[in-house]
Image (tube, rainbow, N blue to C red):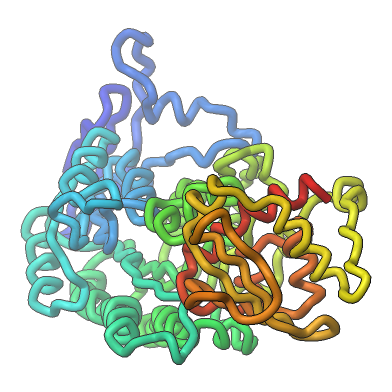
Length: 470
């Protein structure tokens, strides 16, 4: 028998069978408020259960989770949620030393996990390194007696078209996303077979074969779908071993330090917090393995199935909860996410710029942009853009927001463009008048970007200023 005292108000009792642990019961002690410091598991259990919070049930108490990429972001959020049950967490990630731009290391994550009520084992692991993975798995088994759950979260991303994707970047994505997922799973499976609560959860998308999810970033899609194909194959392969293998993917953009570095701080305005993925993962991993395997699950659908009706709590900016940026690979989404635009009356109130006498709506747009240029905009943007417009008003335009006080015009840019944006004239106009967000246009295939993606996304600020002048 094992008695867990991860919280003074909670006692969890379970049975050890070889290397597996089976929880038998959880006892909640009604102590006076002064006896412990909130937030506590007892407090969480008493929290409003009418559709607001994903409460911890204690089902992961004593379970061992091996989580790749757990030093920050979604991986760490999943770890912290499980830690509140008193779970053992193996923090498997590369970050042993602080990153110059991304906060958090395996050691800082381990401290947070233990503060939340769990036990942690930080392991320096590059999922491309077979020896490092095997050593981390062996160390986890030596410390915690086994592995019950594997979360394949580590991932690499480069949203570049084929000609702009160098093979070093291609190899990085495939060796981390596809090969890394396969390797870590392979090393953990012998121990998962011994568990009576075995799960593999890959943070990967449904296998959506619509071409536009490939065309803008073939290499990334292939690498990410490799993780999903592991779900498809391993779920069938190990169904007789009672190992559940599932995938979890976010409906919307999730704001993490990595996303901030990729798209800028402003993207938090239209993103959800990692906690929605943590709550969804907790719900999946708390279930008996035999109940669900081979599924491609979406975060908000999972939490809603658990009775969580208030999704606004997950938005970084609650006021924008109805204007969230959809994530990649999902075609079927609530209309409010697909549109990702100003709502009805506000959208209708947008005035359209007058077209130039010898031009069209786009020429009128650039005339408006020209009136907005300033040294401050140039200083904040620091990029040259080339716009390749197709359709009714086909042509090439540029915006030099890098030199002097800025310059816009028709034709090729005066110097090499940092980012080249290609799209239909209708979508171009909608994007510059606030009806279509650049990130949404890119993710849904309406906008193609080559060059520096982060600088391309800086255009959103310029568009916001333009919308105010129309």
